[in-house]
Amino acid sequence: MEEVVAENSTSQLNTLPDSITPTAKIILEILFRESPQQIGTALASTGIVPTPDVVIEVLNLSYDYPFSAVKFFRWAGLAHKHSPKAWNLMVDLLGRNRLFDAMWDAIRSMRHENTLSLATFVFAFANYCASRRFDDAVMTFQVMGKYGISPDVVAANSLLSALCGQNGGVSEALDFLETMKASPEFGPDGDSFAILLEGLDKEGNVARAKTMFGEMVETVGWSPANMSAYDAFLTTLVRAGQAEEAVNFLRVMNENGCLPGLKFFSNALDILVKQKGAKNAILVWDTMLGNGLLPNLEMYNSMIGLQCDCNEVDHAFRLLDEMVLNGAFPDSFTYNAIFKCLIKNNRVCEAGKFFVEMVKNECLPTHFNFAAAITMFFDGDDPEMGVEIWNFMVENHVEPLDVAANALLLGLCKLDRLSELKRNADDMLDRRISIYESTMASLKSVYYKDGRGAKDKYDGLARRWKSSLAR
Image (cartoon, rainbow, N blue to C red):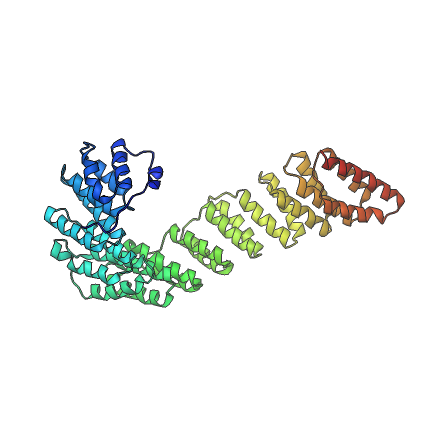
């Protein structure tokens, strides 16, 4: 392995982990600062005899200095025979830096040292694929047998995983699947199809995923052991907006004893929440419950939040009633999501009753929901409920009060309830609650329209307000 370019750097010394051993730190200072040509002499002058653990530690921190790492590796090998783990790190380090000729030199040395394993070739697969040299990754699999490592289905699946992990690699993996099908030594198993279906999900290739799923059932049959493959396929359908078809497949899977667990349903709901797919979410949800799977509080909150975002408040109420029966107890998020939806849709009567229930269950509205509720009640012909909510906030020391306070003043403004308006504004200033400039402008407009006496009252209030700004 020949050095191509000199390396030296001091910047990375500052990024070494605090847990580094003193011996490894001394070695790394040499590797980072000296040119590869000088490293052997510098290391020898330390008098250090590196242990196998130190070799591992140094290699793990030398990925940005491959030529220096090679010099260190050779020097350390004079003291001890390298462990298989150290050799594998060297193979990975060289491959990660696209020094593939040097990587193969290391692999051949490992064969001579009898330290080769499947893990060695997995590193080679991964690094060829990361460099988008997919053909070379496949070639590596094809020559494994010559190095004494059986090209079995576990090895083939490792190659599939490396291919599918890179952009553009899924089509190469599909081609390799055809090779697997023709081979009795490494024919595809459930894991093979799971890897490919996950790759197709990442690419959003729904049509090919459906074909692949059919091939999987035909090749390996139905088995709960293949659940990761089923999860990937169903997730692809849900992500593509084909939740109804996913539900149909769920029925078939259930008939064959292969219904996915909560993990799939949780992931599917996350996707549908992002898509704002309230209708499809209900389909998936009902399928889950219908098969005896009980969602947790987080899943209930996601569903209720989705239904409320889509203004499906009746569905949200149904879920609220159902969740306690299934052992999931609503929290502040649950109540606030529904309360916000009621406010947004001007469900005045229901919002009033729901507020009472929130207080009863010690799940108070957020301060923004408090303010929005006050505005809605004043606009919705129930100002007394708006005042009641404000009084509740004051009496129970709900903070902050500013947003709700201004909502109350504006509501009283619209109804020309000037004496009540003045009393509340004075009380707010006494409590050092911030009254917005825009709110004062609205108050001025109302007071000035009501004659000289009202104008004087506003002017007195305005003087107090201006004084409060200076505090």
